[in-house]
Length: 399
Image (cartoon, rainbow, N blue to C red; front, side, top):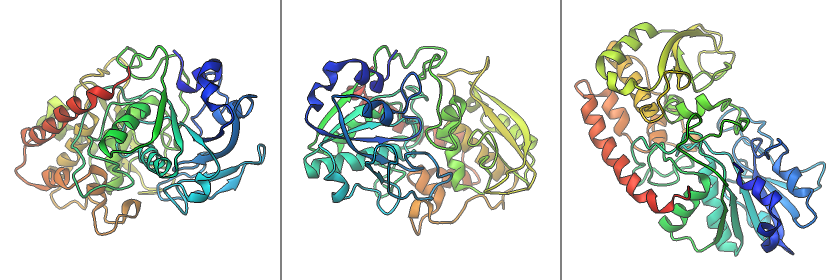
């Protein structure tokens, strides 16, 4: 199969509408071609495309910023001599100055298929700015490594943020190009929009179930090192709102979690007793780890590793959001007074608990904290949101 960037590079007919246009690129470290050339270098090498600027999302065009809320500056590319504008620095939305540097912006971002992953919010902001300035937006489409399954509660009205671009479940099951079509319809954006679709993409095909087995995975952000993380992320990202370590400062971030003051073996047993049906499709492995930075730095943590890989992996059965909800619930049942929720302005959202900002509302936290709540109660509200999204997204699927 071929990604959107590969088709644009190898099919001159696709590039004809760009003749005489000033072209910008929004990209990150995973914006590479099949032979691992970065998209900026590959496009700049073409005689028929005039690349005049580039943009970087959260973590930067070069992927040098390790954590959330670490901002990237603007700079001038030392090789091409073009301006590089940060969309996670002084601004989150493109400035008028940066919009004046191009006629068409190409967006080549590897996404993780999760509402909170900020690249889709940046896509929305670029669509809105391009509509206001009369610019065209082309998405060079890439696979969703989490595949087509849908899971999680829909973001509630009033909870929109940089990590919540619209009313969709946590795991949306769409590609970036597809999400762009949904944004345009949902927010009534009048913009010149085009998707350079992938060729031969089969999002349901084994063994990748969204990611082609012959394509090398490149981190789209520093803590997204592999496909297992991408599959688990719709659940493990909730840990950013909890006091538990999500494995930052280890080699397997957002696949593992734990803390110095829990007994992970007891937590796993409680998870299996309380809602075993939510643990299908993966293996939970008891582990010990010591973060070299971030939460619980230099402290021995007892925790677990979520393996959405290997012989036990069942793509359609795996429910990462429910697994993480269940882990929180098990800890609350075992340690009723445990200080579970972090209280800080996550992505600069003041006056709200981070877990609620991440989840798009307080419903999950309230279920975890309610002493008598049951798995069926969470399933009831979540399943309704999931079924509603499946119906809404159907008309926008390209593959």
